[in-house]
Length: 423
Image (cartoon, rainbow, N blue to C red; front, side, top):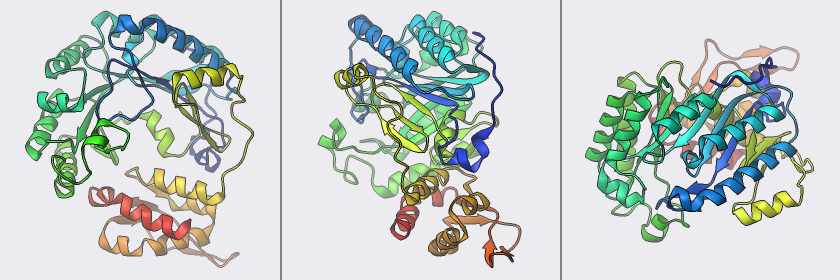
């Protein structure tokens, strides 16, 4: 494995400052937008290139420009501890192109020796030598875009792979020392029923990946699905069936030994996705490439979503980040609640009190009382709130979290109620 610069982390990720995105980032996302075809549900910023040979020049130019963007980014005060190559289909990169991007990141920021380096890969888009070269370059986590184990559902989704490609990809992963790989699955697809979903989960459990992501289909208006189907109507599963799919996944995967640590994510012990936790903990991070978002100095900003606009933006030598305009305090509070409640452990009330004050926490708890009584929200505490004699305000402790699975399942309802009160 490539040895990257080893620098001690400053350990800011657990501080209140880090939670608000104003600390020094130690995570980076790189968007690789190229795909062989656009999936029927996809509204991501991508560029369709067909087979690898047709897209070679476009990919080479993009890698060059991505390195340029990395070079002009503001420095960080600690090495990168997580990297994530997402897309698109990052496995359309050659090993040399991946190495070039990692070298650019290491030169600019440093990459910690124990960094988690993830890459999304699609079945049918990589070979064993390519995979081995990725691992030699430093990749130590793979997220495989499986989505379903039924040929008809893959075809409906417009996926470029078939079921045989999935099993071939698993066989390639098994021929390497890689342990940390994840499978992505989608529920709520057109024509998908509970039997399909259970069979997909059984196949995934038999493969025994270290991590599983189970996403409920969102029908975006700009997609082929959005132009073809109306949410909640056939051939999409009903809301009741979609909810059952969620409950079945939770029951089967937890029984198989997976920790349901986030609304859509399950992991064996020790294999939670460190990079994605940066987002859910509302910590700062770099984003590079078409449509990528950064969270720096308490500020979120996104790159242009098309290649021509992205290249023009880079030629204008943009300031990264732009002139700071701190978000309103309520925006930070709502982001913290929306992201933190996705995690099984939820949010520390002591940290919320430190960041936003006891009156705000009291307002949150009052707003959530109906859901606490209903069992969708849990407040884990060892004792009643103590009274801070200096301020005559309650001293809140414990964790505020959504229950599993019902609280997770109805998280949008809980969050909508919070937002209506706190906005």
